[in-house]
Length: 64
Image (cartoon, rainbow, N blue to C red; front, side, top):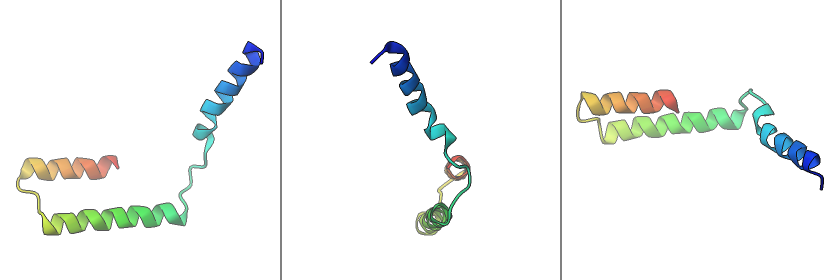
């Protein structure tokens, strides 16, 4: 395999995941809904003990 062909295959392999569709399907929406339900359940069973923990959980939700 020539070096230029190998480089082209590497670039193609690395860029294909970036070209995936941006739209969420029903499975992704259902998964996010289940994640939120689990987080709400955790907060009900084990509420944050202080403002720092509350802020940390809010950051976790915002970044996920």
